[in-house]
Length: 233
Image (cartoon, rainbow, N blue to C red; front, side):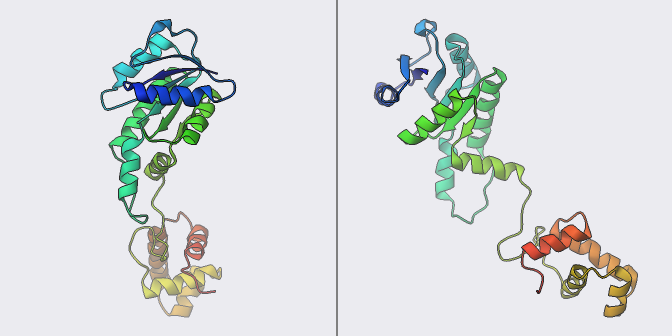
């Protein structure tokens, strides 16, 4: 695998070059503070990116070096990692500039038909080796904390571990009673008779339960409630 190393810092370039040369089958075909078309054939571009590495800059790197397989960007995930470490483990993950930046870089690189990897600037040797190997194999890879942010951005909110419904609004006592009867497979008419309320009121409660649990059907509402510990067994 032919690697080109790009970083504005000589010490970083030297460290990455030493790491690459230790890997069987890896060859450093060039390195520098900027891309050069005289680098020869390149499989993976291993580049340190900073705030100044905008779309035009990265496009220039790809255009000059023309890597055959992809690019690993060190520093693309730095902001996300720093914010993840400042947050507590139960604090909500929110989309931020680091994720947007990584997504923009990923789109730019993948639009060129290449695989992409995003790592924090202080990534360890094993992370760099794994990401570079994955990109060489045609896979796009993200730092695990950045990947968690990306998943959180596209995943609907789920219930809290204490059984609170997805909407954040708890079920009323009557809704809990209706839910218990729903779990037994009892139809609305019989639920109304047991609770001595109208069938119309039962339908209202069922609708409220489905909304609070984020369910599209009675069956899904029961399944979701069981998973969240809202049903008495």
